[in-house]
Length: 112
Image (tube, rainbow, N blue to C red; front, top):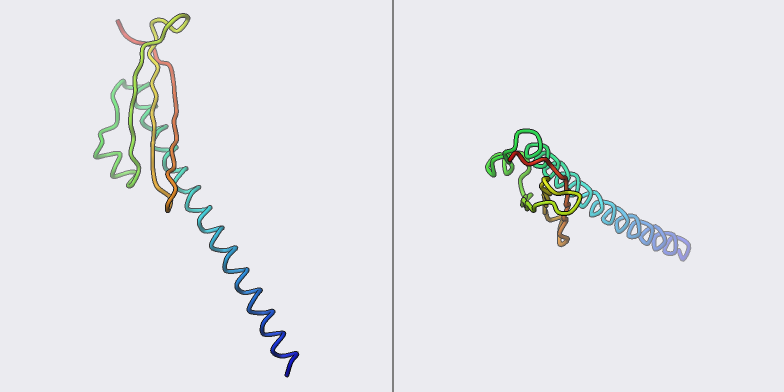
C-alpha cells in the first residue's frame, strides 16, 4: 500500500511540473505572437511611408492587427543625413501583463 501511495504522489508531482512548464511555454508563445504582429504592423507602416509617402489608415491597421497600436514620428536628418527624414514607427501590443514594443526606423528622401 505504501508503494502505491508513493507512486501516486510521484505521478502527481510530475503532472504538476508538466502543467507549470506548459503554462510557461504558452505565455512565451503569446509574447512571441504579439511581438510578431507588432513587427508586421510596424514594417507595413514603414514600407507604406517609404514607398507611397502616406501612412496606412488607422482603421485598416486596426482591422489587420487588432490590439496593436502604431505611432509614427518624423524628424529631419542633420549633418550627413541632411535632406533626409528619419521615420520612426513604434508598434505596441499586450501579451498578458507584458507590454510588447517594436520600433523600426528608416531614413527616406524628402521631396523639396
